[in-house]
Length: 130
Image 1: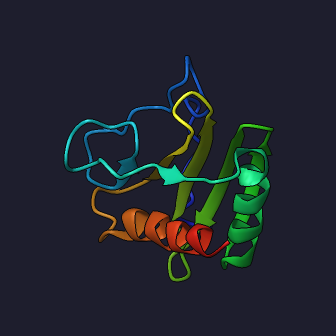
Image 2 (image 1 turned 180 degrees about the vertical axis):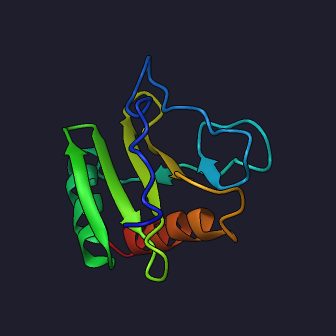
Image 3 (image 1 turned 90 degrees about the vertical axis):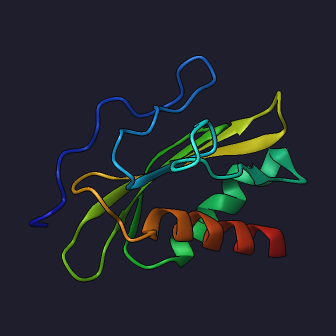
């Protein structure tokens, strides 16, 4: 785990919001307002089972570890195959908006070569199949 970095201390939901993305381009968030970081939230037809469904999808992906799970929140770490870089990925079931807010961010470096955005789109595609 040479490039794991330290787990951020600002993760979780605070007043209905996930942590904002840093200025670096290696983060996407459905709650971000700028084009570099903005990604659409996940749509769920069944809010009650959304987190459990997400958990199943995440467990099916390689090198993942679920760190925190509650009724409306899921936090997982994704590790890159080559160098062991760790990305922090959060899902928040926003019952008011009836969507799942997402945030996926690399711990280290600047560019992620689009990995965080691609990961969320992969999860979105799998969620849409359910």
